[in-house]
Amino acid sequence: MTEKELILNFVNQYDRPFNAEVIAQLTNMSINAIESLLPELIQSQAIKQIEDSPPIYVRANRYQARIGYQHYKGWTFSLTDAHELLDILEQGRYKSIRDIAQDIGKSRQWVYIYLEALASIEVVDMRGFIYVVISRQNVPKIGRKVQKGILGQLRSLNRIGCYRLICLKA
Image (tube, rainbow, N blue to C red; front, side):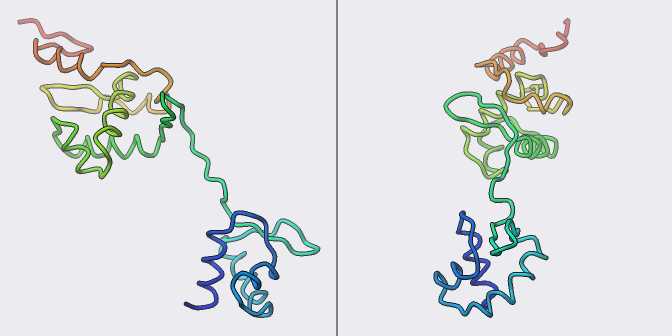
């Protein structure tokens, strides 16, 4: 492991402000070697200098902000994850949550919760027992209002030949 990799490993694990002496104590590296690498780490935006005298540093992006709304039991919806699920739905013809979960690499529970939230805001619907994306317009509203059991209702509507927005007349 090179000196730079050792310092980066330290930075990625250390959540508190630090200086060259702290890195030297915890990594057994010389302070001169550390001080020569710190400007390079600042340039690559791995760390930020928050104090000039004495120089104190912190890891850049220590706090990753997640925009989302809590639904229940601590579930937080991520807009990125929602768009990833919608991309998967648009690529294939999925009839089961199990197949979606397998392709997206998440649990069936995760897929069910997200589909339920997306169906509640009229982003996802079921047509011919296949999950389809209606519109991505309401995705930022995910998690604000989740209608429990909406996926079962969509399946029931499909059984009688109706859709949520338009009912087919025989």
